[in-house]
Image (cartoon, one colour):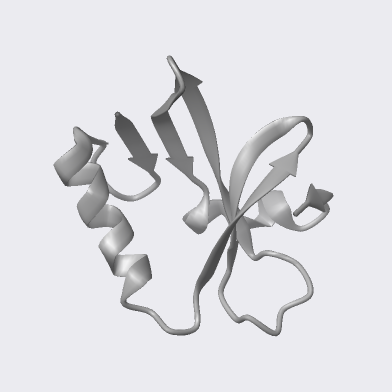
Amino acid sequence: MKLHQSLHPPRSGAADVGMFFTVYAKSDNVWLTPAWLEGREVIAVFENRADPKPGYFMRLEWRAGQISFIRDYRYINYIADDAEFVL
């Protein structure tokens, strides 16, 4: 499994990528939920549960039924401004 996030070095392996998600797990305000964006499965990230739409997303790639790659768009959140998500 690999993770790419702008402004950070790439991560790989279940342990290193898993550490990335512990940061989100420690935040009470951030909410991650599966969604669809332009026919692709993504993780929609709400920085406040009261927000009507996600602030940004993480694109997922799958191989053999498992997530093989994650691209985190946290630092280029303008991509989600006009995006139409299906939660």
